[in-house]
Image 1 (tube, rainbow, N blue to C red):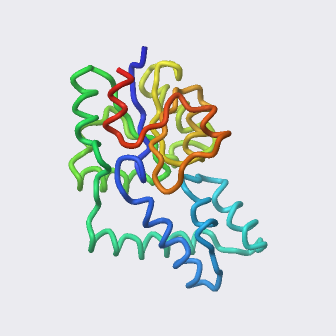
Image 2 (image 1 turned 30 degrees about the vertical axis):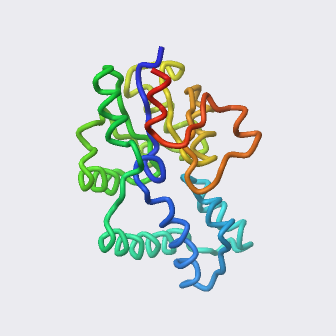
Amino acid sequence: MIKAVIFDMDGTLIDTEKYYRIFWPKALAHFGYEMSDEQALSMRSLGRPYAPKHLKEMFHDENLDYTTIRNYRKEIMEECLQKNGIELKKGAVELLEFLKTKNVKRAIATATDEERARKYLKQIGLEPYFDKIICATMVEYGKPSPDIYEYACRQLKLLPEECMAVEDSPNGVLSAYRAGCKVVMVPDQTEPEEALKEILYGCVENLLEIRKYF
């Protein structure tokens, strides 16, 4: 029996993953690095300490200043979000309302820091739906390590097998699966490869379809 649903945020509940795909290459170009679209996609949901290591290996540069580049990416992406607003993914509110009526707990497990996560959720009116908001900054290792999902389950006082994780990216799926959660993928920027499909509890086109598991 599934007693809680733990959601990734970017690309799963809110339509922001496409902006990371745009602004990582722009930020890196500002500092003299050329990032391909495929490389930008590989950054999805990648948490500490994996993201800095991944970028340094990607550009064969041990001196790459990840923090400075990331801060610049956050700055220019934030300007875009302020201008264009944040769009909800299809079915987000309907699914959260449905889970609420079923007395299923709801949590967030995001690579975004807590300040920005709460800001975004308040901005789009979703914050009141969640029992817990868990961010990668609260654990030692971010996605694809299982830490964030293990911590979320402990905060919900539930076993991982009692929790469903909803993710849009490979790194997020791996994190939740390694923690022992039932993982449903709602693909955003790319479809899952065959190896990833094998570890999924389900794969759906939009959030509304998740209701069929309850």
